[in-house]
Length: 234
Image (cartoon, rainbow, N blue to C red; front, side):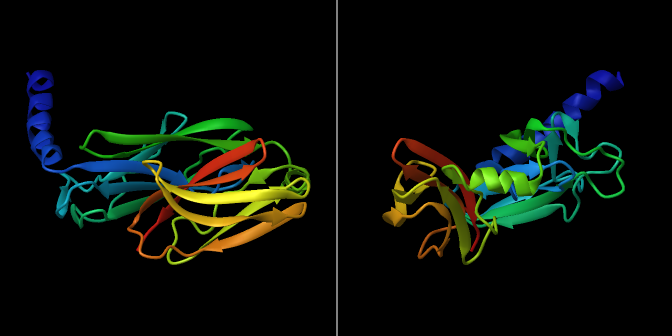
C-alpha cells in the first residue's frame, strides 16, 4: 500500500507548487577548462520568467541539486539547505552554488576529458545541462598552447556585478569582433571591433541598463568563432 499511496501524495503536494510559477534553470561553472585536482564551482540558477513576483516553495529544505557525470551531489551529504521558500521578482533570479569535490566527501577529482553537469531545482521539474573539460596537462603548458592559438576564455568573475573581465588570444594580428547577445539572439552590446596584435588580451564589460540574466558573448576572428555564457546579477 505504501508504494502506491506515497508517490500519489508527493505528486499532489509538489505539482500545485510547480504550476504556480514559470521559471527557467541555468547551470554554469566558474571556468570552462579545468586541470586535474581543480575544485569546480557549480552555479544553479532559477530565473523568474513571469511578469510578477513568484514564490518558490519546497516541502522540505531540499531546494536545489546538481549531478556530475550522473553522480548525485547530495548522496549521503544532504541537499542544499538554506530556507524553505524564496521570492523571486520578475526577470530576477536566485542562485545556489556547489563545489565538486565537496570538502571531506571522499570524492575523487575528475579524469581528463569532457564531463556532464546537470543542475536542477527540487520539485519543479526544471533542469539544465552543460559540458566542461578537464585538461590532462599542466596549467603552464596549457597557457603556452593557448597563446599560440585563437581562443576565448571564460569571463571572470562569473556571475558578476557590476564588471567582468573577458580574455581572448589572437594567434597573429587580426581584426577582432567581440559581442554580447541575449539568449534570444538579440545583439546587446559590441565590446570591440578593432585590430589586435598576436598574443593575449583582456577587456572589461560593465552592463548599462540591462536586466539580470544570462547572456552570450562571442569572439569572431576571420573563420574562427567561439561563444560562452555569462551571468549578470544586479
